[in-house]
Amino acid sequence: MARKVGDVVTIIRDGLTQENFPSPGVNETMIEFMGKKVTIARIYTYDNRRRYRIEEDGEKWAWIDGMFENFDYTIDI
Image: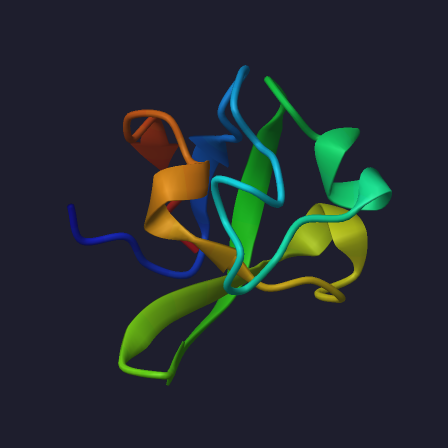
């Protein structure tokens, strides 16, 4: 699914663990976002994987497609 900057997505509600996502990894702060809607702030590629930064964590952590539930909606800017 093609996501873009400004899209609102939901972090998965279950399974956001270091074991399931060794790369880029998961930390306690990221786990707090489970089940919450977040906004994609930036998209880039690292290790041949598309990665995302979200507004709600100050673009601090790397997120990947598997960490998101199905696509929610797009905000037109």
